[in-house]
Image 1 (cartoon, rainbow, N blue to C red):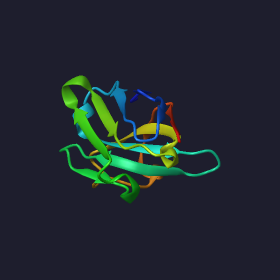
Image 2 (image 1 turned 30 degrees about the vertical axis):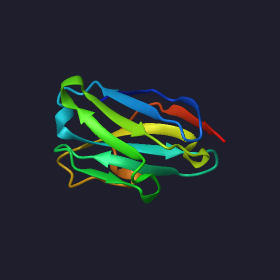
Image 3 (image 1 turned 60 degrees about the vertical axis):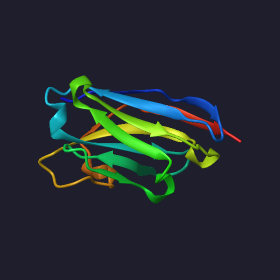
Image 4 (image 1 turned 120 degrees about the horizontal axis):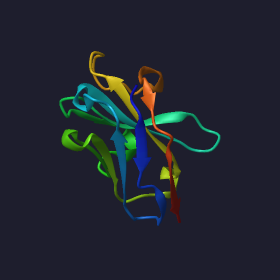
Length: 125
C-alpha cells in the first residue's frame, strides 16, 4: 500500500509563490507516475500537473508557465512549484500515484490508485 503525505500549502497573496511537496511511502517510488489535482469548493477534482516515471511532464492549460512539477526519487518526493498565483488557484491540492505499468500521464482522477489527504492553498486578492 502506498501512502502519500502532502505539505506546503498555505495562504499567500496573489502574485506570490508556494511549493507543495508530496512524500510517498512506496518502496519503488520511481515506478510510479505522479499527479497533482485540485478541488475547489463545490467543484470537481481537476488535474493540475503530472510527471511520469521517466520525468515526462504534463500540465493543464491554466497553469502552464506558472507551475512546475518535479520529482526526487532518492527522497520519494514529488514537488509542485507554483508561481504567479491567482485567486482561482485556491483549492485543496491532492497528490496521487499511478503504477507505471499503465501508459502515460493520466489526467482523469479515476486512473490513480493512491491519494494523499490534501493540503489547502488559499490565494488572497
